[in-house]
Length: 217
Image (cartoon, rainbow, N blue to C red):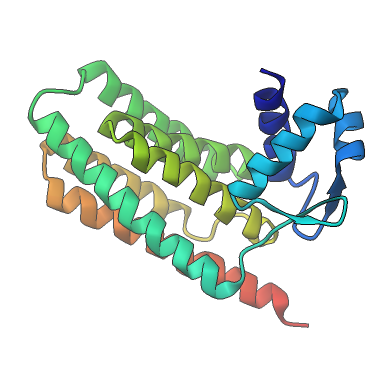
């Protein structure tokens, strides 16, 4: 369906920073960029507005960044949901509902993410990190949590694009991923939830510090 294609391509452009927060995008411009008619583009912009990535303004939309208070709220919700999915995955693994190959793939993804992070391949590391956390949520089997997380991940990503820099805590992040995987593999659901929550809140603290530092003249 053209509307779905238009929505996916516009979302990708926004997440890649081609249209940073504050950018104005009209139906006509978006249709030209996507080489589509205006009808699917109009529906795609409405969908992106419903997801909180843009807001209507005049004849088009403006890309939205969360204010500091809303950004903190988003991290809090993300932390709660990622704790839930990690805890659920640990329970499912303990009960034998997760294939060994799925867990092996998740661990391999964590290793690949750590390598990209350590080597300073920031854009790749960000994408891999999201794939890692998405895979945890997928294996947890909670579709509503995954859908909500996808929206929150998008909003946080757009709102923190200007804070991206070579990670100062790459070893710590990789260690948290490893501890999370160990807890899940051992079926220690409470520990998995706690580690996942701490991981998200540590990310929040580091990101907010970077944002505040860059706001200083």
